Image 1: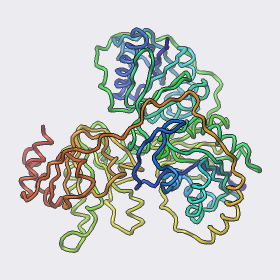
Image 2: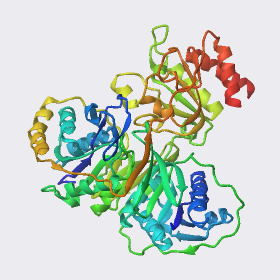
Image 3: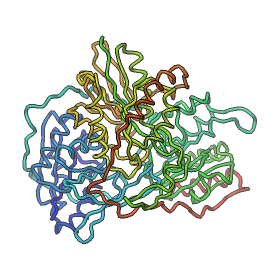
Length: 344
Length: 269
């Protein structure tokens, strides 16, 4: 029988974020099939009490925790040592964790230390007849695979947005302490974060809508001129009113290399598609996007999709979107912004 | 750093993104239909890593760049003809599978073995570069595993910037959630850096660099050892194309105002 460990880390405020609660839901489902519902939760951070209390009613058989000031920083040397210690303490054969940047960085290395294997970007876990299999995408979300592994421990990093977040009453829980090795060679200090200014933050993973800005916004329009400042104003105005997340369908490197104007607020991090992100949002609105596969993988995981495009045959929208509006995005988005402003 | 860095870039080939991919089941498991016929390119994020490595080596005298690549030899040769003109490096090639169905841990073992065998490599000056994910397997685990095998515990993933400070320490920007970067300062090599996009455009072809590289690329390809990846313990229950086609409702000949109203109603639902 498998021994299941859910690994989670609290955020800066001490609580567990949504990806951790989604991984908890996934863990409970797997445990119900494989271990009669038994699973252990391992917490690592500078303080873990608030997180342990947050999931006190989740039904974990045991809580293990490493609370150590050295874990206040998300860095490989200390995080890997902590995750390794928790996995060993739990005797885990299956380790489930949210695919956060922090865990993506360290858990593959931990799997090597434990003689196991790691799979990332897991979107689905299935347990049938006592056997666990996982679904993950290959070739940048162009092929879907379901696989199993014989090696243990098997570390599974579950992509955010694939499972409902666990909801339950907070309570009071006591975690069994696990020690972080005293002697760790640490040659890295996390010195801070770089985030866009609050009014320039355009990436919002929790947003209900993804707005995709295509390269067409910076191309010459019907009057033979480009209108990049107007495009910026329209897009930012829309984002401000809807709190949507912003994706870019084409690499800024490509655009810059082609000598084209670039929307000033876009960064590499906005890029979606073959060399960018494939975010998960309930709705997506693409504008001025062109191209076939592989660009369209950028909104593979958008549930409801609508597109505005002047080309009715564009491969980005035909067969990929639920609704395609054949229209000038400049004119439509100006009206959208007006309506949104009027509605407050 | 007066003596420079020894930068090893791990990167292989992937099908040109414009190609249609179709999974088939072969005698040894899943594969791509006509895999050997598909035009290949250097894995995009590994390419960024290579360009960043070449740039760092250019700025730090005494540095050297190796490209360690596991892939079908014939395809590697094709790709090296192009990529060899963009950055100066010494190729270390292994002849083996490089598709999305190969096991990352076994691939990492092969890469680590090849790196350990590089003559003259100073592990105290080693910077292990690569893409933070491949465009084939998309595992995002291979570099960490290679790093662990080489005993490197300073690891960074989703790197967009590496700056060498006056005291030879590195400032590294890693992608984290919400469009932010985590800023870290590392005391120096050895370190593992899985690159995201970085900040450099793809260099233009430079025939001089190409000539210089080709003197070493062809012998490296001839020396490439056959490196099987047996995928021990890994079994694919299925590999499928996702259902892609949606019934698209086309809305045309409507005023921008009417379309805008429909969109706003939809957003507010």
